[in-house]
Every structure is written in structure tokens, then in C-alpha cells.
Length: 130
Image (cartoon, rainbow, N blue to C red; front, side, top):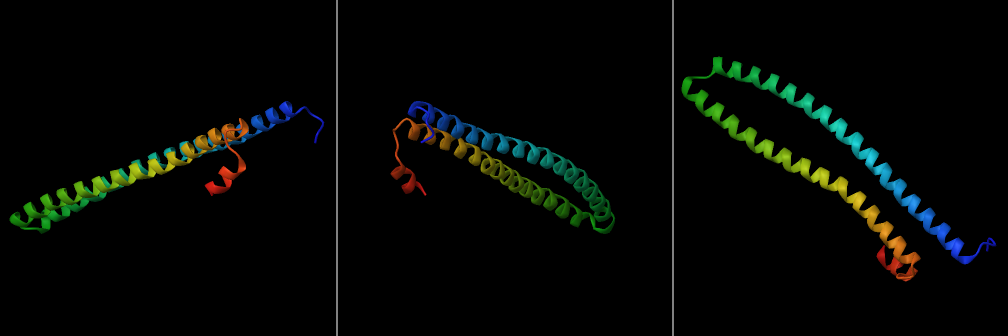
């Protein structure tokens, strides 16, 4: 033993575990912020390039297609793009939900650490967890 009183030793362990967990949470917050900024820049670039390409395509199709074919092509493009936009929104929501799960797991682990240190859990509970 280190010569410290058992209460002091337990308190040091508690504080050390909490600092480790909070450092993990901080790292995840920073990484999530960086991902969000990167995602925003990429999304704006993508939208600008998409609109330039789409307008060029519409001008080209307007010259090439017959009047009846124009109606079908333009409305068909509208429907396809709405479906693709819905798929992209679902993918973004799933991506954000996956990022939140890590932080929630870290906070749950902090609660488990505190329960262990208070004596409400023992090492057998942790070995069954994995």
C-alpha cells in the first residue's frame, strides 16, 4: 500500500477515474465540432457545384429534347431529386445519431465507475459486461 488512509486512496481513485472519463468526453466534443465544421464546408461546396451542374444540364436538355419529352424529363428529374434529398437527410440523421452514442456511452461508463466505487457493483458485474 502507499501509506495513505484507505478513504484518501479511494478518493484519489475516484477523482482519477472521473478525470479520465471527462477527458474522453472532451475529446469527443472536440472531434464532433471538427466533423460538423468539415461537414458544413463540404455541404456548401456540394450544393454550389450541384446547382451549377444542374442548371447546365437543364439548359442543354431544353435545347435537345422535344416539347413533350421536356415535360417528362423535367418532372422526372424533380421527383428523382426529391427522393435523393430524402435519402441524404436520413443518412445525415443516422450519422449524427452514431456520433451521439459514443458520448452517451462515456457518460454511462462514468455512472458505472461511481457505482463501483460506492460499492453498489463489483468486478463480477464488469466481467459479465464485456
